[in-house]
Amino acid sequence: ELEAVNLGSTCQIHGSPGPATATASAVAPPPPPPQLPTEDSVDALCNSLNKWHHCPELYKAIEAIRFIADHTKREEDSTR
Image 1 (cartoon, rainbow, N blue to C red):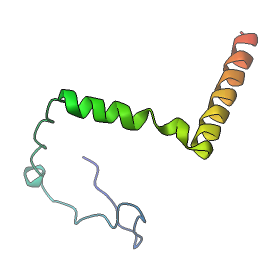
Image 2: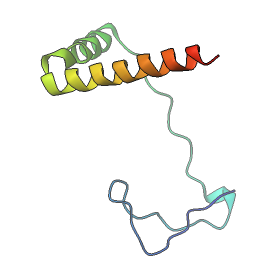
Image 3: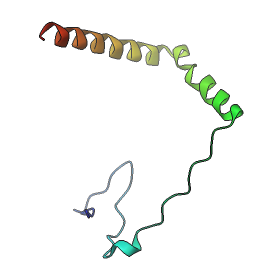
Image 4: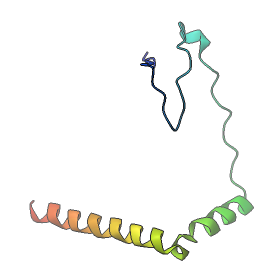
């Protein structure tokens, strides 16, 4: 079992690692199973995901990623 090694630094996103446990029995219990999505939650998620095209910066970034992926795929296909 791997344990986190603290070298005196902390992650800016996650913070410092917690104290290492000596035994496997001290492991936290598994999280409860996620709730099944309801029709309202699915509709809300779909509505929020479909609004990305209203942000010009995000739209340009996604188009750039698609462009790079398309050209990478074409290059890989041409070398086969």
